Image 1 (cartoon, one colour):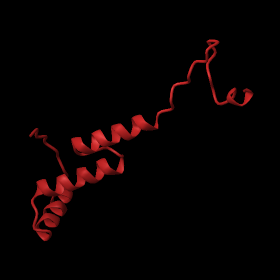
Image 2 (cartoon, rainbow, N blue to C red):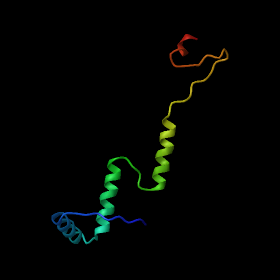
Image 3 (cartoon, rainbow, N blue to C red):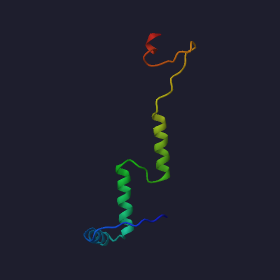
Image 4 (tube, one colour):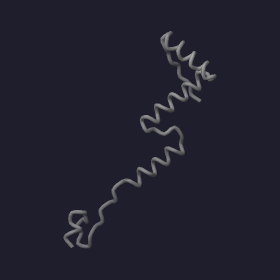
Length: 83
């Protein structure tokens, strides 16, 4: 698992440390929750299964390609009524 180093001012660190103790969690658990919430807020998946599901849903929402008529012209919603 990749690791990154972050820096907090002393006041923020003490507030996070107190929160972790109050909730009987460690800093990593707080960070996991915070980043999961951030990704959710921006509509980003946190696991592969969710990412694949979103990808399939998005590909199903794409507009179908227009069909080509026998005379070579493209069929669109505008000229469907002309028939």
